Amino acid sequence: MIAIQDLTFTYKNGKTPALQDICLSVPSGGFLGIIGPAGAGKTTLLRAITGVIPHHYTGDFYGSVHVNGMDTVDTSLDRLSGITGMVFQDVESQIIFPTVEDEILYGLENFGVPREEIPLRISEALHKVGIPDLLERSIASLSGGQRQKVAIASILALKPQVLVLDEPTGELDPGSSRQIFTILKELNEEGVTIVLVEQKIMLLCEFAKDLAVLDGGHVVLQGETRKVLTQVEKLQSVGVNCPRVTTLSHLLTERIGRQQPVCVNLDEAERMVRGLMK
Ligand SMILES: Nc1ncnc2c1ncn2[C@@H]1O[C@H](COP(=O)(O)OP(=O)(O)OP(=O)(O)O)[C@@H](O)[C@H]1O
Ligand SMILES: [Mg+2]
Image (cartoon, rainbow, N blue to C red; front, side, top):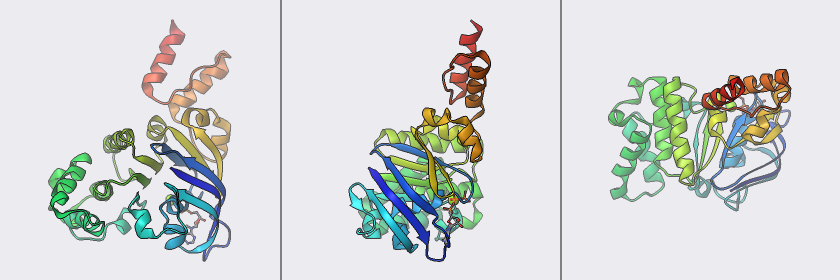
């Protein structure tokens, strides 16, 4: 479980707080999606959850962040990273080794995974993201999308209890993006807590149980995904466009004057339209 209480954080070289008065909780096994405009504080919030704020990125830190009961300020980054794995927004800064195998191996060795378990962990992680054939490839020979999958695989191999991902599908085509979300859903069903920043709003709304909307360092909306999606005007005011199927259900509610269900995927929109045509 992640519990954030009155968190305000200003980077050491920052003039204003990047996060302000954040109160947010994610239950164990939760799946929280975070959205908001550029500079809203999404990455900063993920850094606070993993503990790199305040351990690596220093600054003024007020309030508290607890992950599985541990206060991130009092707990070492080593201990915290045994629980939480993070896929960075900037894949290039995440990958440090010249080959795919070395990249995944490094984390496993670092976390003391027994030698005999390592080959299976690597192969499972690569299979999960659909790139088993890239094991021996050099990173330099990979496309942006392939690198993104390597970064995700290297974190999955560590089997974190909490998985934090910062725009993990930025370099991926729609098919691969859905594949990643499907993997995240499976992991979530196995009990892994997921916190994810994502621009692909339609995918996010289909998979995330809860949403938090950030703007200017504040959480301006939070709650169950469908409930948050009913706040169309508020979302638009911070520059977040609802998925088109959701907008359709809102428009129909307005035009017909009868509440339509909030749709988050095409199947639901089809059902709603068929219901209306009856
Ligand atoms: N390392 C840093 N040092 C100082 N200020 C930072 C640092 N990283 C981010 N900031 C500032 O904190 C604020 C929030 O940035 P953050 O990167 O968290 O936003 P974001 O919502 O992730 O944006 P984006 O959508 O562009 O990824 C911004 O004003 C940014 O300039
Ligand atoms: Mg960011």
